[in-house]
Image (cartoon, rainbow, N blue to C red):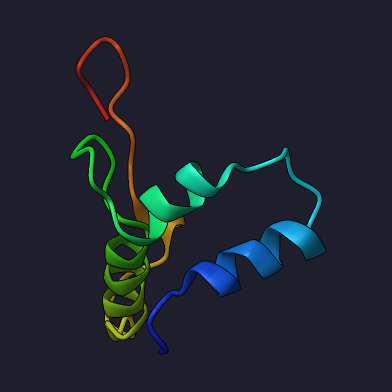
Length: 73
């Protein structure tokens, strides 16, 4: 995966339906300075790491049983 750039985000905003993004907002996603939001690149890296996990041994979600309010299954 390539590193996220401002031009990439600007292109996505231009191509996709979205609200208007200011340069400051896009810059904050590319290189966070406020410390309030995780950088978009960090999020993309975490998603890439999750994508690489082999889920072959993970059971289907239908096998997960919910507990009812009375405490029995």
